[in-house]
Image (cartoon, rainbow, N blue to C red):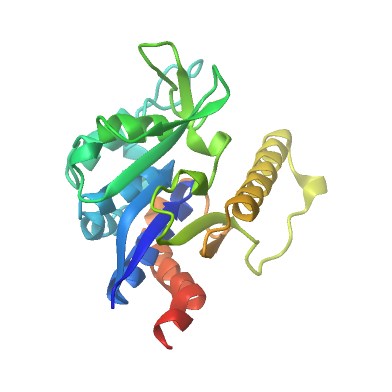
Length: 261
């Protein structure tokens, strides 16, 4: 019997490619995902999945080299963000279309952050590419999105790295993919040797991990698949094949008991 699932895909740069492995595991084991809520990289993976193009996205990602990742970076005026973010979305046209969200194959939502009002913005209608573009706008990296009504939108992970609270099908099995899981078994960071930029980054990541944990405790998904936050760097898309495989393994570890009963 198929099990209906609402899938929450968190933010976290390249390690979000593990979410493609999670999706592969769910499909292979008879779970029916009829809702996906995504933030940042999760909004992109979720959109491909909602259009039935997740396999193609995984294949495309797995072919990326470091040079090709660099070529996707459309540099901008650094006063507004180093990257425009349009080249990535233009390239995505090879993988999945820019459809109205309301016409997608399953219920879909993408989450961004409105810095003007310090609140989440949830996209449930309109251009899926516009939704992704706002949701992935990492502050200082991608150029922010300014809407016609004056909202200043940045990456959804600023306020809500794992947006469990926007699931609508609460009767479903709710599975959240947390990209801010505990550190993998590697040597601990030598904090006394960090430079100012690295220290700022580690502080931001610690804050994200706390926000994510609070979201899990408050909204209580049925299952959380934890991806170690140090499994890859933010731009390590050239490691996509490895990351997809690890995502599959994490899903098996967390959910395998459900199909062995």
